[in-house]
Amino acid sequence: MKLAITGKGGAGKTTVAVFLAKYLAEQGQQVVLIDADPDANTALTLGLDPSEQPEPISELKDLIAERTGAKGTGGEFYTLNPRVDDIPDRYAVTTDGIRLLRMGRLTKGGGGCFCPENAFLKNLLAHLLFQEDQPVILDMEAGVEHLGRGTAQGVQKMLVVVEPGRRSVQTALTIRRYAADIGIHDIAVVVNKLRSKEELRAMEAQLEGLPVVAVFPFSEQIASADLEGVCPYTGSEEQKALVRELIERVTAVTG
Image 1 (tube, rainbow, N blue to C red):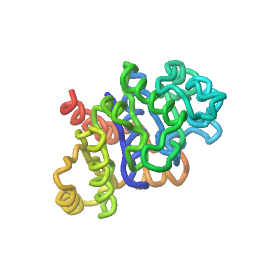
Image 2 (cartoon, rainbow, N blue to C red; image 1 turned 30 degrees about the vertical axis):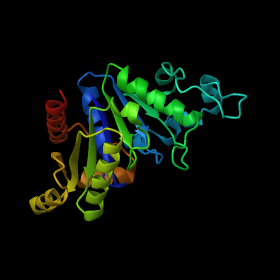
Image 3 (spheres, rainbow, N blue to C red; image 1 turned 45 degrees about the vertical axis):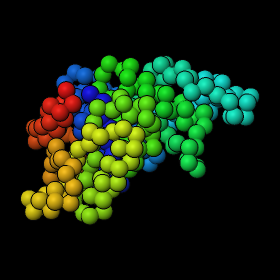
């Protein structure tokens, strides 16, 4: 299972990513959870102390320069296929069967902007998506910047987490357009923080055919966990049932 999870900031995408990772780890699977959002909240949502956060891969300047061959060239010349197979073992933080990697911030600029750091991150993502024989969950920012046309082929499904509200729905529709540009067409919605069936019907009418594969009701417990800085996943039967249904519906489509 290789899933990319995105959505508007605050919609709950990191919570959904952590729920998936926690549940799969409880089933005995070794899960790779990738924090590909520059805001880097995944470690905190897992319940890790700030001092326990993994080092951002994009900030390993010396290693990246050495692996890409950019060292001494001023960054003008570098390989697009650097060695990355040892990175997960060296830089992931492991907790409860989950290996957490933090990608860090991509260098952005004009159209076609690229650099050794970007080449390294994209090659690392490709390795994780194509070579790792275990579930990989990408907690992304509200876009597809961390995915190129090559790495996108390794994503089985993109889940867009949407909360009630027009802006969140519009973000989902925008993400669908961005994803289509790089060849990702298998996109579904996870509705989060739902308070009523009326809200769900209104959202489905606005989603322009994007399928809803799971619904997470609003939870005071999850909101309180966020404020307290603790992991919102308790492993309750209710939480497990929600995540199990989501996984079953995703795998039924992706195989």
